[in-house]
Image (tube, rainbow, N blue to C red; front, side):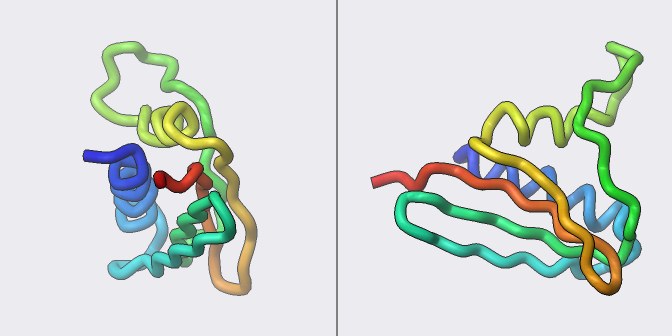
Length: 92
């Protein structure tokens, strides 16, 4: 699995589990050498980008992993929820 696929999986599953929608919207945009992946959901609460306090926790590491795999990671509000996005350098 590529870094882009793994990061998309983590962000999509977070949106599906916590975002208040059964079908999160995914947008891919290639601008020059950068691939930007955006996932929109209906929950206005922004995610936290940190490790869980319990090192034995079975969840809570997804966005930390996405941050480690990508060049940029962020979230922006929208009318009905938010968009979580990440950017990667596109492969040749």
